[in-house]
Length: 216
Ligand SMILES: *Cc1c(COP(=O)(O)O)cnc(C)c1O
Image (cartoon, rainbow, N blue to C red; front, side, top):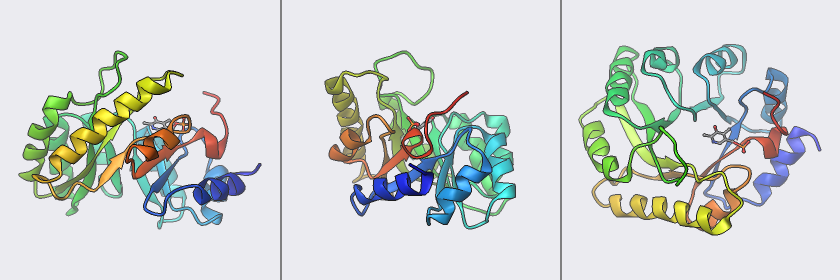
């Protein structure tokens, strides 16, 4: 199947309100253009340099999402154009995004990444750190935190995945009253997006199911 076809058939199975971030990391410009020609405009990358060079080359009506871990010193390269930063997990990063947002005269949107997987990872805020981060972000005029993001463990144990996504969905709904701007719950990738959607995800990040396996 070609990229346009896999994209179109995937979209037909998604609920109307779900946003599909087509994860194009490691994939060439031509692959992204195929998805673009099929009408898709929202793409996700996990390396800032790669995203910047693709942004420079490709049509300017593409929305670029940074889905990977962000090093503070690289925020400046994407600040002029990034449309959503998915993996914000520290005050230090918020502080830098605020600084670069102000410099570029933009309000930069982002999600707080929450650590929900039981496997060891250094990325993502602990569940109890999410509220303080949201409170900190509210004081940043050039940042809008409009959702949460999480990744489930890399496992074939569907119950485990379900449990982890549910924990994020619970955190999300428990914060919505105090933070009414929260509207995106970014969870689900090629292997687990159907479970994520069942549990309330409204933004999925799908790469290999659209573009084929990645050869790193
Ligand atoms: C690579 C990546 C994805 C997409 O993974 P697939 O399994 O190819 O769909 C989603 N989210 C993040 C954070 C990623 O790094």
